[in-house]
Image (cartoon, rainbow, N blue to C red; front, top):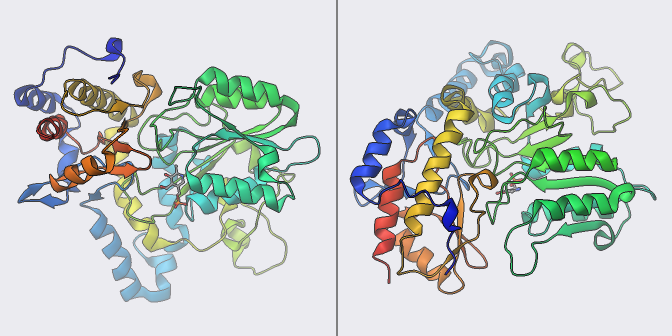
Length: 429
Ligand SMILES: Cc1ncc(COP(=O)(O)O)c(C=O)c1O
């Protein structure tokens, strides 16, 4: 059974609880764990490896939400200007920390709506097919919402999605994409290519794509490059501005730990903020602030990513983000990534020692081609094994067909969590 390329397994690890605890002792980010609530299991904490689906609740989130509830109670309409965090400018709280997480200028990032809504909004600006350029390149097996978004956008423009959406698939017998195949497809479609839309990390396989190379190739072809960063944001360091990415969208409920349905984020390269040729939908929250309450005709978009906002800030959907993002500033993405590489490598090392279960790790073995998550493919019994994990207090998720996704989040997971996970799996028949 092929688990991981032997050469990528770090043999300096040890499969003992003492080793795991020693690693935790040495971990400079160790104290962040105590700032989150873990779901309980039989009097202790569950092993939570599902931060790629829904991040844990930061202990400060309740106070952040309560603050807004109180200000609403005490100030009512006055909260827009006089709340402790005035609601009129609430989204501005996020630009600095998010710009560090995704690697861009503060003007290039905003918080609004949810991922799929933002994807549609930005596709309206960045996908304008004509008879010359109409193809979209995406990964096969992209998250369904992205597939639906592109399919319906194609129809809005009068195209049959099957004619214009080109999906890049793994080669026969392989589970992940080869970068060279992505770049070759972009080159092939060249002057008919309008857009490349990829996940930063594929939700199913956990493959991290070379966003810089994909963007450069798209630009050489004369197309736009956009990314769905749902699984990349807060997971791996990003440099969207320096990579020259045109636009990106993400959600805040996974690695960003901001709660179910939390407001999503969007990045738009600064060169587009004032570009009048790029159409967009207008709404008063995206209008120049000074003119917002003049109630006059004529949409004048803000000269930053906020110019794509439409509606009043969704304060209650953003309050947990206000508690969560400062943790990333304190920890720093580079330190988080350094820990994540070790944590996931330790997981791969321990999984390699299990000979009682039959599965394949389909996530790339090379650390630079993956984030925190490892996807374990079970050709048989996947659902049953997942159920056994849940009963044993291991929270991971199952995605058809046959994949259990295991994502130790470096902000709150420990080496001991990974070791305990292995010990439990070792007993499975
Ligand atoms: C990769 C990816 N894209 C898009 C979505 C959809 O996000 P939303 O429901 O916030 O629109 C998800 C949700 O899990 C996702 O994982």
